Length: 474
Image 1: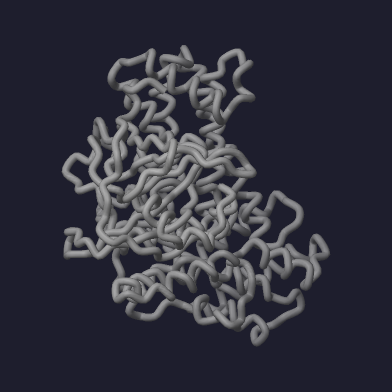
Image 2: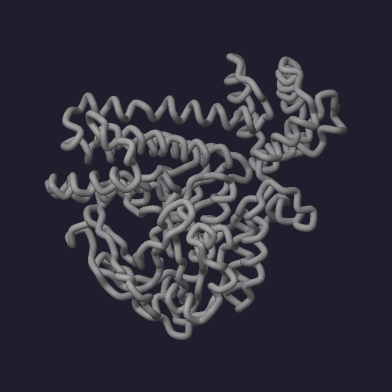
């Protein structure tokens, strides 16, 4: 790529960096030994204190819409790419988040704090274990260097990986500057590197937009199905590969509320749980607008974008059938699903526990046997009425309790990264104890397993958790 797309620079060292944690799953993607990552040389390289042989660090430029408003030039304000590492599934771009100032830091300091770094590290790996497309987090290091946010905190660095970190905003950057040659160079680079099947298409740029739109729709369907809320779906936080990118003020739905806002900064609720679906479409339109000069006509651009709604609907329908243990699809299922969400909304039932406990519902059960899931609802009679319809639907396909339960447990996680779990691990880490981070990393790597020794990590959140707030500050 030409020099206009990035700036070469060295990371800024942190004093006395120390190892916190590494992900075995992410390490396997780049053929590294996770045990070796705790060694001094790896800690130095993946904190930015030492540059590996042949590494040529850089930070990329991009622009974007933030909260629906054009923000102009942004770029890697605290992210520095070290290069690629080969792996069994292809090369992965390795990036340090929090490794110091770059030309794109604007008013920032180029650093990340321990609090937000733990959250990104854990959630990246939790999402991967849930089967949702995501960037990965290889390791986490820290330093006692003080960083000022709302209060004084300490610095940390997340080593994260993806096939590429190109974003929707990378294309917007060149479009809004009227740089069509650079726009084409970027599109050709992405197609050749990650969508080579499109090279021989009659209009590869139209097909690129079509495929990115489809992947984005599928990703967001996956978010909705596990109750994940991103919190900052700006176009500069949208991956051109349909990966969950940039974990900031995210959250997993607990007491169900379709209008829940997980980001305290998002006062208008633009990125609420329910709004993630239309905002994903809006972001694809922003990408389509940027690619329009290459695609050629508004009609072709619209046609590419038209795949979003059916792709999202089909994937979510597929996921909901799996979550309810339904092995075939019937016309009346949409009403069953809609009424289920209305029931969850009216009772603010816990999202994760509802689907997990629903798997234990016996076809011939009654009020007592239904208690674990039934007791999540204040209006027990309303639940009983819906459960009666659900059982009738199961009988239509001769559902068998044991087979259905096993299938639903493979689909509905028991363990997700609830805010209070992350907060507890963060507070321990801020006092020098990283055992909570290690424990959560191990639990979240097997979200569908029963793990009876970790039952408390699947419990309803304590009362104090209702007061937790996360914002864009990191």
